[in-house]
Image 1 (spheres, one colour):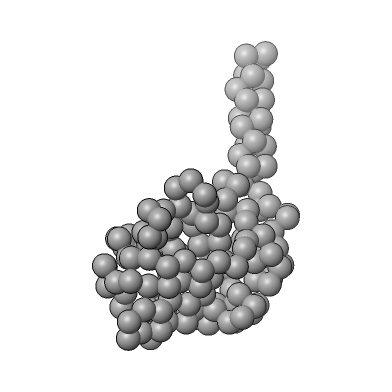
Image 2: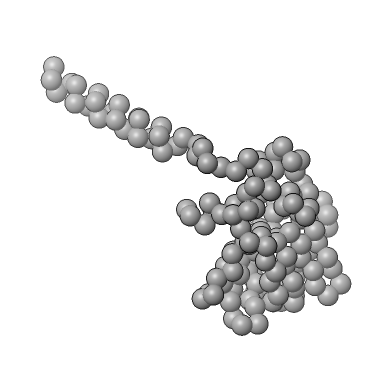
Length: 148
C-alpha cells in the first residue's frame, strides 16, 4: 500500500508544477499605452535584407541587423501592402536597438521610395484591433518580451 502512495504523490506534485508554470502572469500591462512605456520610441533606416513570416530584418548603414515585427498578415493583405526585399526604408515604432549587433522593434510605420505603411496610432494601438482587444490580435509591444 505504501508503494501506491508514491506514484500518486508524484502525479500530484507534477500537476501542481505544470499548473503554476502555465498560470498567466499578473504583471502584464493593461493597455498598449502602458505596455509601450517598457520600450523606446525608435526610428531605424536601412535596407530590407530578408523577410521571415511577419518579421523583416533591416540592415542599417552601420551594419546592425534589426528585426522588425510587421503585424498580422491579414492586415497587410487587406491594405494591399507589399514590402520588397532590398528596399531602402525607414521604420518608426517601439523597440530596443542594441549597440552591438542589432535589436528588435514593433513597426508603427514604414516608409520608403513611393510607399508609406501605417500600423499604429500615436499611442501605440494597432489599427487592426480595438483598444480593448489589442493583445489578442497578434501584437504585444512590451518590454517583457525581451525578458523571455
